[in-house]
Image 1 (tube, rainbow, N blue to C red):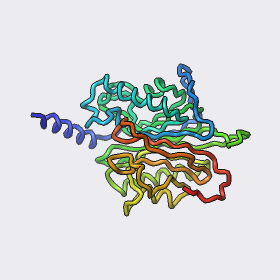
Image 2: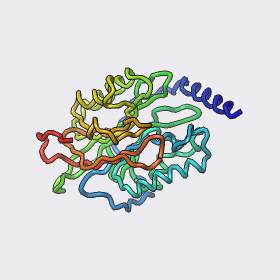
Image 3: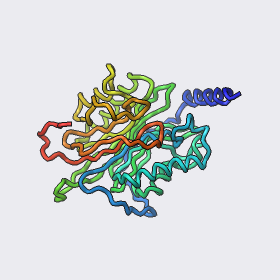
Image 4: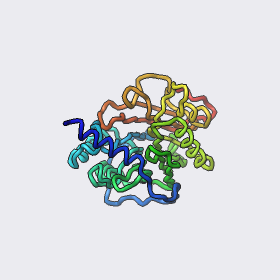
Length: 304
């Protein structure tokens, strides 16, 4: 008897995966994001570096099999667990994937707004990359720093998997001496899980948007790709562009069932001060935390 509900759920997921997302503009530009003035920022953020985190929220289900099996109170409890870790970690910026707006399958409330208000992040941008009668979700950035010049992009559809995409926003971050600041582009991205060729096409779309932007850039998210695989989207992106990452061939940075699928990439005018995977069970993915600063000399090779 226990197998029947599971079969029903799997059938529903298959129907959802094959559904058609409403047609809309796939790239949306917005210059300014207004802060949520009801949110007070009282965290003691690090001053030596820009601290960022990235997490695939898994629609707020934590480590449950599927969000359809989770009740409304549990969704809030799961998100409160994430807030507790954010309070402890104190990042300036949070990148989220599989981040739900109000959706029937995940409690009928906006998870991104809930995290922003509860954790105290006045600036946020949320790209809805997939939407129908059951769900509305995508990629998001939460920030304690003002966000401007945002881009919300949904990749070309790739049935039967659901649409993925990225969101970009710009912040100002000072050099170490604090005398001047420079614009930094921040990106939260989610790539397709099922096919290498689809991931490659999605990376091409990402790079086409970035071609006109030469700011220092930090890309964070779920790439669904490992470095050491023969066909590696993440390795190709890093080696064929101006990006680098932290110790890509090292072990100990796995984020999903023993695989390193979640990454933080930086342009070579930046450098990592610290990079770690948190042990907390917040999702079926682990949270990544990195401290990043401007490189003293952009001519130096990245030692990491």
